[in-house]
Length: 276
Image 1: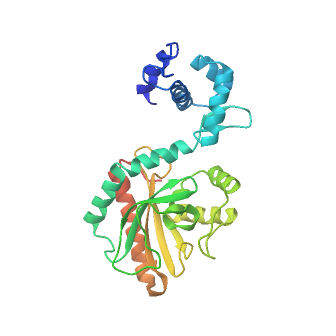
Image 2: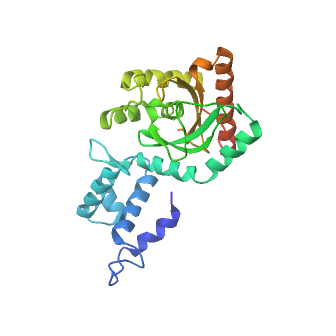
Image 3: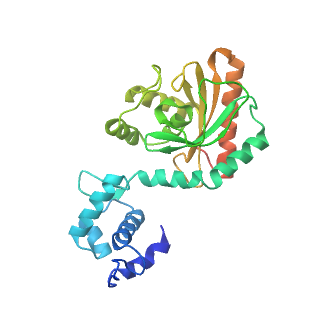
């Protein structure tokens, strides 16, 4: 991973310039990147001793770097003292995807499929325990909530968020619940971890998720996960929002089929060979 950073290993013994940089780079940042690179290349979590041997850095320096990176979520420290990449690395990759092929392909797919022209369809990515909307095709029907690009909502409340959470290991969901808890937007928002895990299991089995007034009163939404090339976990989620009282059983069925077709087509466009 990140072979372009391998040359940084040769800069360690350089003398700093007057402004405290090494060949135009900040030493602490270079060491942090080397550390992340070593963890990414390792099949198993690495101890401080193993990292010191690999990077030829003092343990005291590595301990400070690891402690800082753990605080940011870029590195995770296990109970036995070993380190590996943290889940914030995944969040950053999602943010990168959101600004490149992902949104472009989303627009192309909805144009080509012409799905549910009257309904609002959104694309979101996970950012910690939240989702961030990165693309939106607003429908003609009025909704109780106006979606906009950059809008942030708790993932546990939304259909596209639940779709993405359903692809993560249970351990990650439990960690989210312990660390931050799950926020509520309405009285029907799912905030209990056990109940959320049950809903996520149902979403995995069905292939789509449901938000029944968890985001906004009177709204029902359906979501599906989007996968990338070689990704075991969703890189994004798509969702369609409907006015609950004005939606028949047939319309709900059509919405579910549409959001699944959109997610599958988008996944294929992003290089996913198989969709879990």
